[in-house]
Length: 359
Image 1: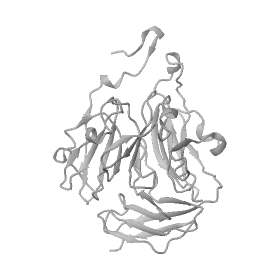
Image 2 (image 1 turned 120 degrees about the vertical axis):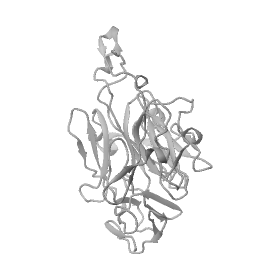
Image 3 (image 1 turned 90 degrees about the horizontal axis):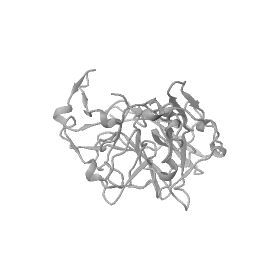
Image 4 (image 1 turned 180 degrees about the vertical axis):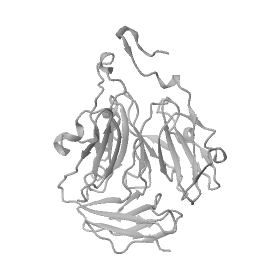
């Protein structure tokens, strides 16, 4: 089969409709260095999709980890953990399987976070060219979502580009999670048949204005954060980490036919920050799945230890929380996997604190 625009003499990738989907897989860690395939008995395998990325979070607020799978041109999945080894899929019921018109989109990278500093989880998904980035936000019930991409200021600005990796991170340490989208087309000669498109595309950085009266997100321009992050690339994966140890989060962007870009964050706003490395003793040693909750005035900042973010990428495990102009946090709580809570009393501001789970 040959796909392409015959009038332009171009061969291009075939649309995903021409490819069959595959069942998802789940492997259970036996704890002895081996894994077992539990896809069938967990109920995961009976759902056939075209998965691109997965985001883990507690979507129904019952204390265990659920999974969101972004699918390319078919409905997205939400797998709720049933606490008996099984999962129940509720993507369509929760409102995240389709766009607001009932259409499946070309969903790529994904991330989930409490970017409003409240109890409403947000899920960002980078979609295909000429489709807006999705920003699903929980409503009156934790598993009822509405796509707020337009009202939150992300939708129209993101529509044209082909989005691959997206993740939330607080790049200016003001305590509000911002959103980075890494972009790039599939077709090297796409401009010959779509004049609005280019193979190499700039990233987009959305600044979270939740700490202002305006709210929502604003597109961060080069004069606010430098031009390097916006150089056009064929972007795919991305990750963040405090590479140089100065407290703010640096970024790595992966591209097709090019070396990865390491972007050092040199913001000089003078904002304070907390940095926690969690070590599990009763749970997994990296404390993956744990939550850190920081009370700062009348708001609560929530961050999850979860490296899986974006598209085919893994970010660092330590948690960085911006305090803005505040000199200290009012309270810090770690919720370990399994539900045990621990108050952290001795916390270093503008430095790293290691918290070991009590035995």
